[in-house]
Image (tube, rainbow, N blue to C red):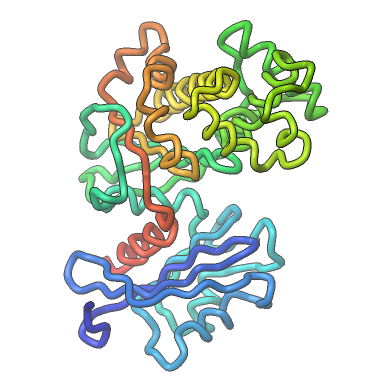
Length: 338
């Protein structure tokens, strides 16, 4: 382990409504080395600065800090979606003694970590060739769907993360089957419109399963029926497990979901012309790695008419590291040092 007293240190924070992760990294040369980390219940603290002060203790302030926050960031300030914290880069710097502080949306921050992933933190999904100094795209299908774009500088040496709310665009059915799914979800969820993430997310996989259970198993004999009625949050994982065991309905649900995910991925790749590469993060990327490598996802990704050729050489990579948010915040903090 590196001797932090002989190296610069940077602080990384991943701040959510339930928990906050703080981690101190040593920067000795080009590599970041994790020194220590702590998990804090967010609601037990009135603000972030006292938490940081408690974490650092008697240590000298690190050279820079990046805090990934669950909410929008504008003008160096952020109000967290599920916490009564109003954060300011300037105030955090003043209160903690850290000279350089950056607040970044907790999904957009992933852009800063992607170029620095080690082989064990990633796995190929679709082969291709990334083009240097071109935009990259990251999607994260978890509870919802995160979307962000990485915009390179002209020399390609540095990225700027652009947050996006593309997941809340309208879900566009591609077939009679997807049209039926959309109409069923509008009625089931009592919605006026159906956003993309209602289908393309871990939660969305559960919705697709509920739709098939309702339309194909009206008698309620399928083993997933009870789970759908009593523990819907467990349905996505149960669907994935049942599909792996060969259950026809679960396999059909997963195929519908993979097709929708691939199509949305292709649409967004065209929007940003992501020749720098496409990254799949979120909780489903590692869990569904082999299904994502199948034909359904890739064919839907490329099915863009004459524009399919634009997508053909874009590599798609899955992020396997569950601590990618913390790692990416550390990478961003390192960037602040110039």
